[in-house]
Length: 111
Image (tube, rainbow, N blue to C red):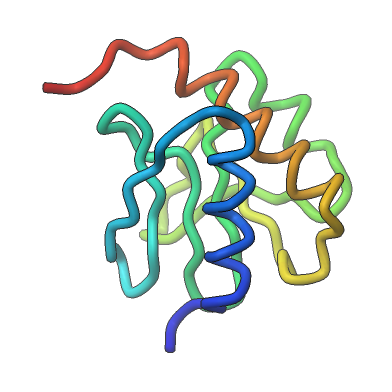
């Protein structure tokens, strides 16, 4: 499997805990969680990708364990990648989900 199913369950539970109804979608050989039609975060090959938005990009990139998201040979500004996300405790996972939701909730819903 290209992602950790237990971590996917934890991630979905945290999204629900924070008041959203995520949609799971298989993408890029892993799984993505969509909110209002927008990708919020995802899991692929032992990495977690978190959408933080352009305004919060530098601040979140400086956090421990975060690095540039580069899945196609081109850095995706507004997203960060976390290595070893299965090691995140509940507070760490909650913080990353909160950060992503702060941006994604600011976007208009897709039809």
